[in-house]
Image 1 (cartoon, rainbow, N blue to C red):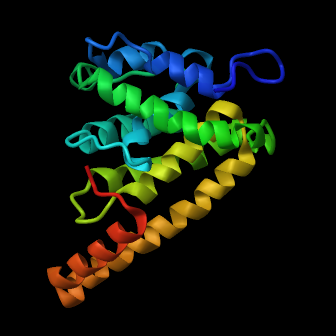
Image 2 (image 1 turned 30 degrees about the vertical axis):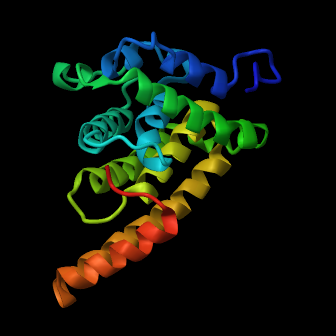
Length: 220
């Protein structure tokens, strides 16, 4: 894993590993994570909460609470808040230490391969308008994670994951890529809903099996 960025500051991979590091016999909480994200802010927390769905990290039962937390983060970015607030019920959601380790490992593999391409550029992402646009996309993707649509939530989570990295590293080009994936996710879900209305659950199930086979993921 990379130890630091070119300017001598901790790399995103290092900060992420530190945030997820926890004694093996103790569970992590969303509240603890939100208090330990450091100067990477909302972006890093979006990365962490989208990880189980964006990567093949089995985490049954976490899609809904993580999706709600992501939605709340998006709304706070949209409102211009600089500090995070989450209700106690969400803060108290526990994440097993073993899951934290799998999340850190999955993120490390991705960042080790791509982090040298990620850098501050297209600084519109740091503007108020840029934050509002990204938060709107995150909110839409979070709603897809929460809704009980019978399909993997990999696409929406990947969008949130990429936007989180873009916000943490002020990489506007990466955010544009996330927008493109987000458009594909919305089109995909729209088509699934259309199939359900016009052809019934069986057509949706066939579509589900095809995408599960293609992506290798299931909705947790």
